[in-house]
Length: 335
Image (cartoon, rainbow, N blue to C red):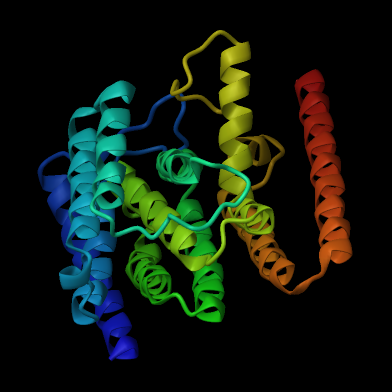
């Protein structure tokens, strides 16, 4: 049944996407070229609806709509919120309120098993509640932030979801496994139309749904709230995490609002270095694959090996950041 449902979910997404392209053109749901965008002509948006329907079919065929109704309601609210934003451009604060409300629904309904044991805090349940809420909202916006190059957010989402599926399988966590695989099916049916040159964008409709689904699946994939698991998840989501943090810091230093759109993201930096959109996607997706394998490897190492691997990763990331920054400075000086 699982394999059958994944195939059906993939086909639903694949077949619905071209319908959405025609619909978006008809109702003028288009992403027009701007100073912060890289598309040269209007591109249909709201492709996230296809991802949502593909994902929903998989969950329906596996009985999760009955077992986790509030989770589905939260997803639906985010999709509706994304559609409204894609059509009418909601303010950042309105979107943020909608995101917090959506994330609270399955948590308060008790459908998210986040109350894992923490022995070094007395009020650990409250701490976990706040952590999970911030984690989900942060991921929703992180995936939205990296959705700036054709096929990038889709490719990174599939890679991270696949790593979560492996982790969930190893930990025997069925919800995380089904949710991550369902997301892969939905995104896989959409990505042929989103690959450069994109015929449609997922929009906030898709990016918020993906971020939320990955966040839920990641939390559900672990069985112990420990330092090791936190590092494991951080490594897995390292690209969207660091990209969001660096961009927000740069914006604040420049005196701009946190959610002001600009060209400070990692993919913009790589584009400035002369890489094509396709190469940028290949580079970031390759790094995502390596990080996914790295995070899974952390599950099987002892403390000494863990420290060595994490230290090596930090050294590599710092070196990578220095090289990219130096190259960008040289480019700016030459111009």
